[in-house]
Figure 1 (cartoon, protein in one colour):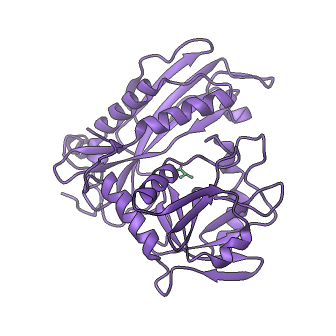
Figure 2 (cartoon, helix red, strand yellow):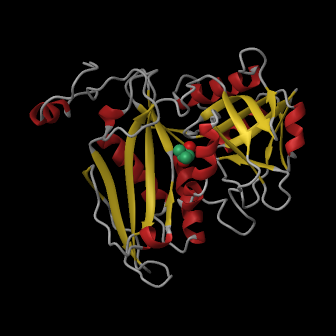
Length: 357
Ligand code: COI
């Protein structure tokens, strides 16, 4: 059953774990942690390779107080999703893209990385071990969170002597509290997310803690999130705290070019290809904040946010609205549908982006 009631006794929990579907309320999932059954863990010493990892019960992990990740932020994360298909199988979306992004990020953070093959196999194993947590069709997806961290002890600033690759999962629904309704952004003028030569272009954990202050201030004022400008000229659009940004004007779609300060999103890259295949001109370039004034639609992309229409952006106290009365522009809506239909296996995957489990 999918009853929305108390979780019951330990014995009942164990019995339910053999069920097809976890016994939770699947309606109105947001983007919050739901503990699942199993997590994957593999370790590696400096100069070595990652061991064949193992599944273990999901739960707290033991870490040295002087681990590299806790003391100096030597850590990366990834995010990808699994969808349940009507026929019962499960679809992953471009997992090898996350794997190669982790390989690249690990190089920047002086960490060894699991190979692309190890990463993808570990993701498959973890998803299958938590199959009953993949939401029913139409209720959301299973968010997969791989972590790579310096787990060995250090005191002086140096790469850790040991690394842990871990994967846990959680069923999720919409990322923003607005649900599928358009979000309202504010352009940040005081804080920056990334600097040239820094780590903005890799998925290091530190990039995310550093945006919390501006994000909290924006949320306190009723905005959904913050849109960052480049730190050199304080003029060009970069990204939102947790996603990339796109502007639409007629048949032209533009997004900030990847140049070291912007996270190379897999949804970003996929939307560029999907839009081009539908006859849009897609430009990756410098986009001045002034261009927000004559965009017809703005949307954000990310694994967590999928394609989120932007209803308004406030810049220097001036609010600019997008997407007409509903706030959801036709192009944003069309690209959202094309992408999610592909991810959910509702349209033929001509590009070979999905992996069926
Ligand atoms: C994702 O979209 O998967 C991310 O990693 C962003 C995160 C802040 C939720």
